Image 1 (cartoon, rainbow, N blue to C red):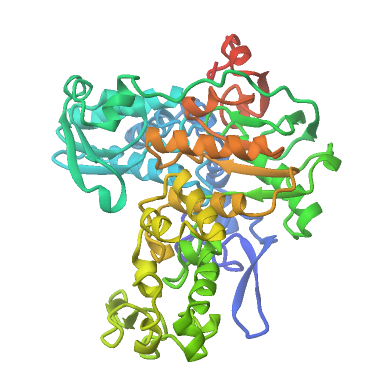
Image 2: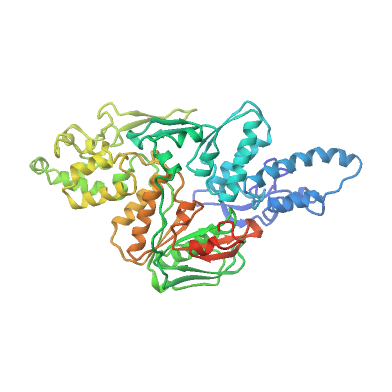
Length: 559
């Protein structure tokens, strides 16, 4: 009954569930068409002939976990079968209960892991560990509340306490206030970020932390510092409306999004937020404005398109996958910096042009490492190792290029500077000052200009993308879409991010955010709450309106 075994896998698709074809080079490729022999079940016909309660293993796997639990409760076994099944069903129900408590009852067991969000994948791994009922284990969790509604946060915290009570230790990296307040012991690092961090600022239980006055975190926990509610909310005049959205669990809903406003889409995990905003709205607008070929989710139409001319998804994906990509190159700051060096008297005397100061082309770069600053050593049975180039010593450029300086600093020195340091050197140049200033405003003053893209966190990558958008010529008709932009951000960083998003809206643009963070929700001009639950019990509009109106709705978990 396993599609990973030759005894159970469909012989035509080898347990993949989709048709395979070969490309022009003869390499096998998986198509989007279901295998006609197994219908996507991945199993042999014989395996799907065995049924319990009228359903085979694939049909049971396709049920949402909350429905699967009800289905299993209805199983009836007699005699020897009852003796065999009772212990197995107990283990199955125990694991399904854990997944339910982690806020993922809307998932089904046949879903591929690649389709899970980062938060869902982490919680599934956690569920697997809890199901083993081990003792004496140290669990390290990185922001387990990602993607969780505040209602489900309480369930997660309760589960973490149970793990502790079983004789284990739990270490959590987290910015969620509810989780911080629930901890037995808190360690606050800082005082700043990057090179200004790395020190132990505060430690102890919650009551001790809130009485310390050298910690930025404790100031927010005491509410001495806080994210304020806007004095005045923007009143929408024009709307972008999705008609009869019916993809996945959406129940043919009409959803109006206010334009030139800051809108937050809320709801429990699996309620249909991402389906509505990304699968339908973003993909359809990408088809219209950017001629993309992605297929949008099921809906009838979208009205109000004449009021926008561009759609941008600002996600937390890396800004580049190689060490050659960095904040300076991505934002266009490096081009202006190279222009500045090409204008120095030394560069003009030597006949150096702008390209001389690029580490991506021959001429000024170190040819030993080809401008990478490091060399890759291939380890045949281990991950590749990168070592600093022994000729340029990591500076990326040859000796002649490094002899050209501005204010006593070479271009390699500038790449090693933080944004704040570079700002002081370059604030006399309007274009450079503008780009560096925006990076500072979004809370990235600690970041080195040449920091390799793979070393950036998702939150840092997202704010760098926002910086690039703010640097562009404003049309006032751009729709920005962000999915949980506060992931990985401290309270103070959230405050800075909200200021930037508000600035985008003040320019006439529209910002739509999927978010569970209450500090973000309370600052919205408009809330669209989807639910009331996840999975099949979701997909409806619970309530819409200002935060004050949503707070009055008793049917809304968000309210």
